[in-house]
Length: 203
Image: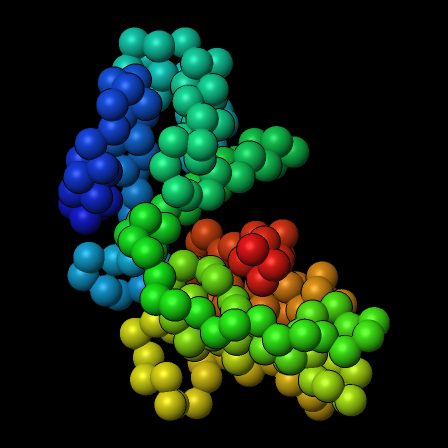
């Protein structure tokens, strides 16, 4: 059980009692955090669909209502709720980085004709959104990314550097896949998929 997760959810003061109880249950099962801050900036868990009837019975609701509440959570609280139906797994990521405002970000610059992005874009993924940037290398024909954790010194070497010669990427999808692979070790059992990385690249 994560005491930090419980404290975070209790501090949200969610009005709907069923939604609050579902989120508190998720907090009780949260063991995976993305970092070592105290309190953690990002919390997460994998919830197996086969376990939902047991969780629902504990709260006195039907399993389908529990699933409906999971789908509604993202609309209620800034967080990610990803339903992987083929695997029967719900990937849930939340925490202070989602609900606390980020500092001002660099302004987007105009891209060269045909480029998928400007020379300097913001990587807005919670926990990495203060200093991380990505963009199109003008005149070189490829994308790059410098991914820096919010707790790092912004003047230090980026934890993740996506650049040639190891990476020669020309689409945002390729860049998202490369970042997802490089960032996965920081997330233990619940690494963000490339689709989520792409969302934070383009948000």
